[in-house]
Length: 253
Image (tube, rainbow, N blue to C red; front, side, top):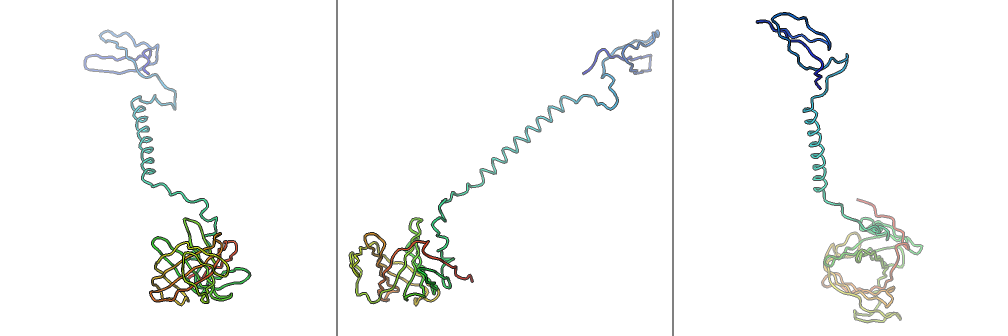
């Protein structure tokens, strides 16, 4: 700030002007015809120091800093708003070992261990009915005519082990008794199939199915027909747990 106690002298005589600054307490000589004018100015500063910052520039710098902070915050919020939230995932998605029985693991060339026997997967059939898809894998190494069924019902993995029974002289019905076990109809329908490997089926076509199960749901009876004029095939099966099987993935192409 200005210090009014620090004065200087301005001497004016006719056409000449002289600005003299002197420390406080110094008095110019009295000279006739000259007028002495006192004024305030910055005090003398010690060497190495700087005069005080201009208040206007300080306020301007603060305003610019605040604007920069506000702009940064608004930009960050806009960026977060533009990014869609990540979809939430099922925490138990892989707890049922479903990843070990997917179509990228099972298929021609895969090995399935069950009951102390290693079965080789010869081929696979993808079966679709509307939005519902399940899989059947033809296996070789046991009694013959065995295959594994894999499906996901409402996110639940279901595994069934089947044995083809062409010797059974039965037809689909709402209730049947086969080998002392009473079965009831569960569901039936038609769909489209796609095969790979050795299955004895064309690459694709229409199929029909008729599924039955005993009261407890453990034992199964199924009927399938592949193609418009294909024979009706009967199979007996039972449900198995993922822990009962050991799967060695099929080789990748």
